[in-house]
Amino acid sequence: MTSRVPSLNWLRVFEAAARTESFARAAEQLHMSPAAVSQQVKSLEERLGAPLFVRKAHAVTLTEAGRAYLAPVQQSLMTLEEATEGLFGRTQEQALYLNCVLIFAHGILAQGLAEFEAAHPGVSVVMSTGNSGRDFQQGFSDLQIIFGNPHAYGAESDRIMGEWLYPVGLPDVAAQITQPADLLDWPLIEVGTHRSGWRHVLEEVKVMPGAARMVFADSTVMAMAMAQAGRGIALARSPASNDGMTGAGLVPCLEGLKVRGSQAYHLVYDDLRALRPPARRFRDWILGWVATQGWD
Image (cartoon, rainbow, N blue to C red; front, side):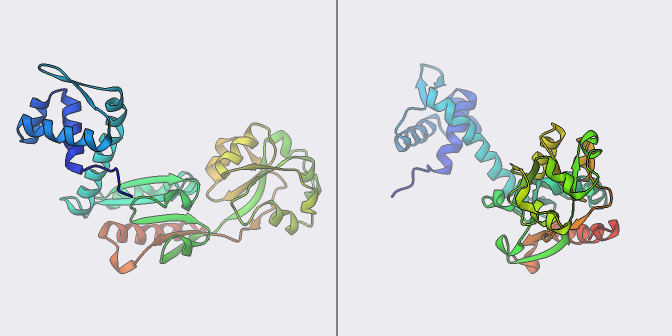
């Protein structure tokens, strides 16, 4: 099946003509003749099977389809330009493309990123976040920080740190929990994508998980918000969730109860030897910085 994705040059001409509302002004910007611009636009319209402009005597206006198409075309051209400049342009040594699970970005990386940038003032960190590594299956990145099995996301990896699990709730809820069995009096908010969760914690404290009432969230950030709203008891995943727990006004239930999680955060990449300089600098920094924090 033939792809409907049009020529990049056609898209550049379309964007200029749409932005200026003039084939003549677009031609000046692109160092082309107005006739060439008109022909490129016509070729694009034929490929798409729809008119993009209403032609007038001295100007053009976008059709409804043209207006809808302009925003994604502009975004795509901008993304391509930024990636090309970052990888191959004057700043190729400076741009670092990082994908990071949200809880780590919010609870850990936000604390130290200023230190990294101060130590490497020429490096610009371009970071994308998501709930899991699966959110980053499309697009380019130098490095990924994921939670769970690193081999599912890259050929090589470094373990950054693990986590400790413990129940948290609103202060009036926590005050009513004096022994592990009291946890079963409340809905337990579970993040179903994590291998270590409530079952793991309850088994450690000799409470039968089958008696628990579970409600589900798609992330620890959402679980904290649900606990803040009084929906039940969440599991803190320390240290990454510490700031989120404090910000939500949650406190530990059963002071001193902490269970070691079975998964960890990893820095993932395809080939250590092929990492670009800013990615190498970030790798060295984060592994050293986390070690100094005493997190394991």
